[in-house]
Image 1 (tube, rainbow, N blue to C red):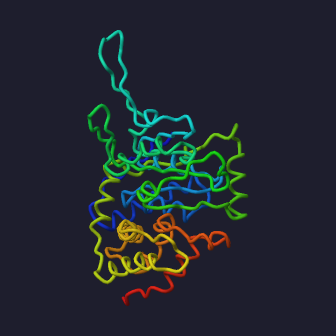
Image 2 (tube, rainbow, N blue to C red):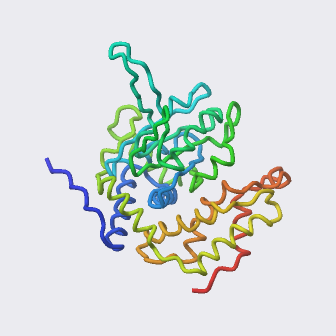
Image 3 (tube, one colour):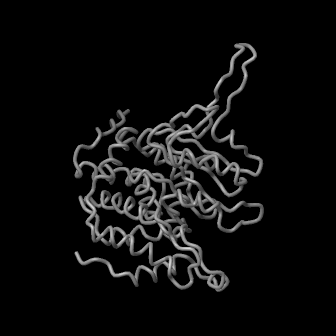
Length: 330
């Protein structure tokens, strides 16, 4: 029996960080077949210390992705199934009175973890959805007047089904804006789906999510180091101006009733830095901005009613905006 490979030490250089980030991507690929773009966008969000909203029909591997990601850095993983009767205390925790000890006891909720999967977040009313606002923004939960930090790194991965809208509660704009990315996960290609079916049904009982092939590559402190390295990558003034120009263009674009706010430009720069880290570069290129623009902005704009009636999608409008805004010359 072979001993498991010990996790790598926290990276000291950009080259080490790039190799480690690539190893995380490869390890996740051992459990999740296909969906390379989705895996890359989730890693970008993690390295940018952001949260993601994943939209896709059930059965496309969202839970498997989160479990595999947690295994790569030995992180804690918690899953909450959002339902109409879910209460805020079911998310954050609560204080109860212990009759035997004659004292109050604090019971922490599932939010005290590294990776929180908020499954079908739009199934719960706004009161319960808002229980995540403080922890997503400040990395802490306030219970009975006490501010308690959650483990770091902390990342919320919320999912919603785009097909079933009956009995759902749309996320308010203030909460949508706190997600760095909105990721769309689609059906796999035919070759990937064939390999997926063969993999899941091969000598396996039931439909358990098998992540045994995924090996730990780093520890939680190492992920924080990757986040700090990404935050230090250089961003030229022209690239910063390019990100701002894209965001401002959405506010005056025909067919967009509500454009992206300042958080849109911040999200573009943060995500572009993480994308550059994945490529092993110490600077952000204009192409990095374009690469992250759709997942960073698609949930920050509201289309005009006439475009929605015609079946247009935010990605189509954003693609036109990106074609219109001139990138800086490198």
